[in-house]
Length: 115
Length: 107
Image 1 (cartoon, rainbow over the protein chains, first blue to last red):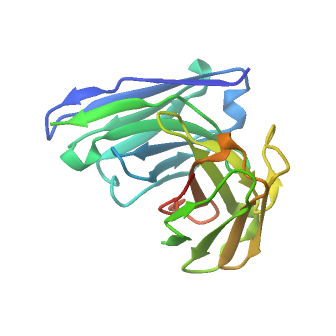
Image 2 (cartoon, chains in turn green, brown):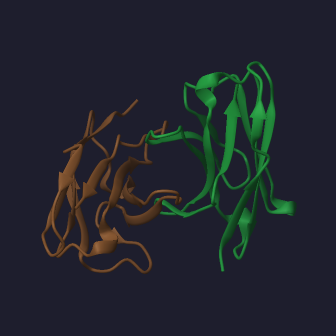
């Protein structure tokens, strides 16, 4: 069974940092591209970052470029999002998702509050 | 950036009716890279349709997708009570991989 489990969210002050993790199981993690998507309270989905299977290709949304860094460790079946210079508008639930013909599997999300 | 616009914002229907949701792109999107998701309150989104018209695993055939270029459609035939939710389209062919603002289908 495919599972994605995020962790690392919490309450942080503006200007602070957090590192989110997403541990994958039930599939060959190194074979898949991965993304992070967030959802602010009561709002829609916002795609924020993509990483290819061996980290050769990385993309960011303009809203996080220069502040967030996506990475992965295929040996640990793990995806990461390093978030620096956090702002109030970064408050959201952060989801990791596998990309295969759309985002076919999602984690349960980890909440981040910047206040 | 490809901007996706969804209409209507809210669709009020009854079980058994058909829902037709629209997703319009600011520039052409390859049909290979257009997806639809369903999200219920407190849950992660669920992939319904990928590559414009292919149903994801386990998705009932009352859900169908179509379109091309800049205009795409999600159709839900014979709405079931569990179908009422928010639906998002997404393009994942050109970064940033943008989502539309969503259409809420309520009873």
